Image 1: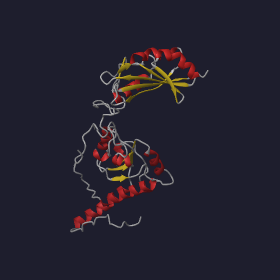
Image 2: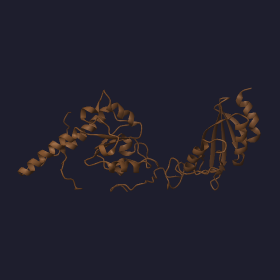
Image 3: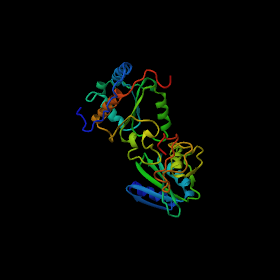
Image 4: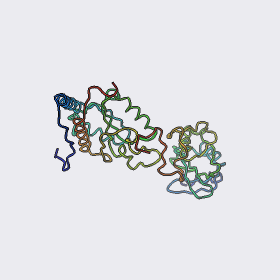
Length: 158
Length: 172
């Protein structure tokens, strides 16, 4: 049995839906179901590497944001994508800092770019942006050309 | 270099007295010395750095223009070469480097990102370094060809040799 099929069977109960796309196992979960699923992936199934934490802004849809995690198993050499939808009013998911140390920085970036709040990450300062930046630039409703310069422009530029 | 069709060289005012004559000759002499002893400070932030290295090294060789030795301290340099994209987070650093350079100083915007932001017209990038510091020569291209860079340096040399070089600056 292929590795992905075996994995899909063993975690299907923890996810709302499980499918395979482009050689990646895609698991859709509720925000509350992220931590149990990640614990199982890490402790039982050997997903020891957190590749990325990011988000998608589906502007106009009911749960507006979708937080996306990518995991990699260095024993089976396969990837898993975990997705959870969160609302605009309460864009909160659980932090993975306790399980993956690298989540600390990736969650900071996701927080400043999309405004996702990671419950349990105590250091959500800006990492690529700067203190005082208003808004979240990768949200689809952030104006494309809106700049927030740190120093005043020379005369002649507004 | 071939003469441009439209003359870019403004006519120098004719000297009207012996003092003016000497002062003009002094400006020519100082300008000649300064244009062949440019000490660039490379403010290198992005991929244009590769082209900067290419133009610095042997086939093209900015040493021929006296602009060979990069000084990595703004206090020892008189030519600020801004090579690559400058974003808003970096803009205060660039301004501080510029302010630390001693007079006389010149600035080259190397590549289209330093010139106008290029295709980075978004929340992060500073759309042209001339919004925060004055620029003498803009070198277009993404990245510029080494010939373009050399042309830009020669344009700057032309500009330096045509400038007034007062012995006492306004700060004295």
